[in-house]
Amino acid sequence: MKEFGGKTAVITGGGTGMGRELALQLVAEGCNVAMCDVSAENMAETRRRCVGEAPQGTRVATFVADVSVEDQMLAFAQAVKRDLDTDHIHLLFNNAGIGGGGSIVNGDRAQWDKTFNVCWFGVYYSTRAFLPLLLKASEGHIVNTSSVNGFWASIGPGRPHTAYCAAKFAVKGFTEALMTDLAVNAPHIKCSVVMPGHIGTDIVTNSRKILSGSETAIDVPVVRKALAAQGLDLSGQCDDSVRALVEAQAKRFHDDAPTTAAEAATIILDGVRAETWRILVGKDAEFLDARVRENPQGAYSPAFYEALVQGTQWKV
Image (cartoon, rainbow, N blue to C red; front, side, top):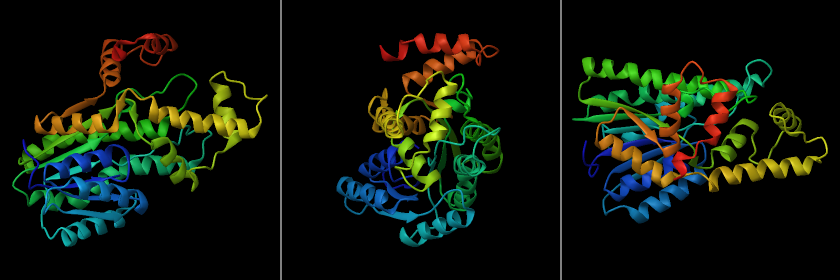
């Protein structure tokens, strides 16, 4: 699929970040876009920007849905058929995701399950819901967003990250297995797994809102415990200082990322055009992938992480 003009794309998590940028770049090429998100407000802003970029006649539709709830994804598929007046789609971007659910040992079970369900079952339910529409197209492409945590299940020593990593490994494995399934049963449909590094998005704030019900809700005792495990003693800091630290970290995650969401979307779309099944996004993702492949046995040792932190190749 070299051109996107005149095609129809579905994007999950289209309210912010890479989902928004994918929508903007696709509509600019004349691709009809339908997106879902849990935030109607964020999607409205994405739609406003898309309409401003889209050539005349290009359609943009939105639908409020939680990807971790299968009935809502099935309803989204019906809405796409209705709102875009079509019985087929060409592109499915399973992009929605959240971070959280660190420890299965002593973490919050509800947050663990929610993170896993959004990041893995969101991809599965969306693929199930939209596969009938992809099958009816002359050509199609499924793009599943995993992560560098889909090949390296860590964010550093002392920082459990099991729900997110397990889900992203599942997405990677599903996509790799899907290649054979599609080649046998639907050869006109291709698929790709996307593995971004650090991308400048609002995933930290958005995840907090989904998991706690408020983007400003910060569980200070949990933060203190987590940072203590990393060797950072906050006993001398008041609760407001801890909250300010968390907010500053979220802002730095967005502002200081080596790859912007727009740059990430461009890399993904270029990968789709080239029919690349494995799309690494960002020089940091490429660097980490190479390091893990060089030393898989030692990939979870403190020495590996220390060497990784000192490596600056992707910043050059």
